[in-house]
Amino acid sequence: MSDKPFTPVNYSIPEIYMPLLQFIVRLSLAALTVIYFNWLPLPALILNKLQIFLIISAFVVFHLLWWWNYKIRGASLFAIRLGAWVDLGGAVTGTLVDPFLTPPMILLILIAVLGDGIQHGLKMFLEMLFAALVLIIIIFPLRHFMIGEPPPYGLFFLIFLMAFALYYAYMLIRRIEKMKKEAEEMGDQDPLTGLLNRRAFSKSAKYLLSLHERSKMPLVVMFADLDDFKQVNDNFGHEMGDRVLQYFAKLVKEKLRRSDISARYGGDEFVFILTDISLEGSESVALRLQREFTDWAGSREMKVGVSFGLGAVPEGGMEIEEILHHVDSALYDAKQKKGQAGSISVLTIEAEGSY
Image 1 (spheres, rainbow, N blue to C red):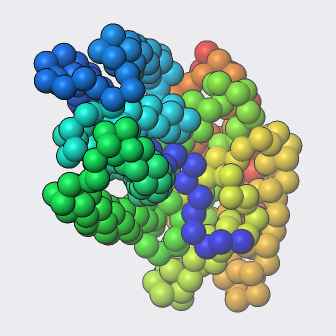
Image 2 (spheres, one colour):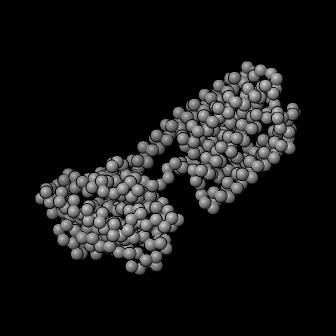
Image 3 (cartoon, rainbow, N blue to C red):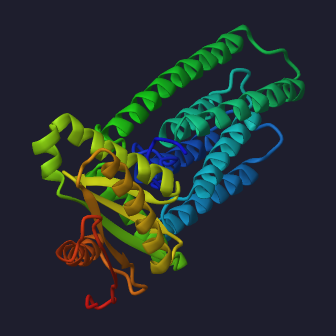
């Protein structure tokens, strides 16, 4: 199993994503395109003005509906990809019907690829870039066949400079995403154990709770606290104390699934969210962790155990802070009745907050 903690937050939608700005830019470009074709001194290729305005109107209506859907349901990868393809389709159509030998509308393709790529990350940028290159190879021979003249000298340099700009943007986006990923990993991990830290746990827990409300997927929250951990530091030194924490984290990574959340909550206290599992199943997980950790500590003559508090997330919905308060109470009960190997206290949290 991987040593890296699993964070179920969807990082495929970058934090730089600004849907309102993108929406305004899309409508503004549609308005500029209307102005451009309305006062065009030459007849457009293939389509007449009415047909062009109908296509622009369909583009605007699509993005109005897209925005309405976003305000209700939020951003999904499918909706983002669909919007990007509509942008590119509109840009390519504008370039195809532009009658000038060096069409100003070609810049719409550059804007579409750069805008959607920077907004939505490297994967989307590459998808739009390759699609744009293929479409340019198709439409420019077609355009000049209809115009009846070969491409002008300046057009080749315009396309070359656009390709250079897109490649430069690709290098920058790739570097930015690499640095962002490294910063996220450093910011989300506890440096000693490699588990999530408290801030990252809170962010991931909110995502899982929202998923629980929509899908009714069972969730169990578990607190773990090492018993008599202070004696380890006092009798064996802080270096051994760190090894104890690291070994417990190693057990957690081995026994829990990648769909579960594991975090060091602070000091010798840990918190987990187990997905798609019953209270009985999570209690069995806690027992295995408890037994293996206690055996390992005993083999090194350390009288340290671990106690657990478990609680099932109610279907009525509840904030993570309130759930943690209940599970922390269960952990306190477990600590009160612990033996050398610790104890486990299990509760069912009610939606009203009683249990």
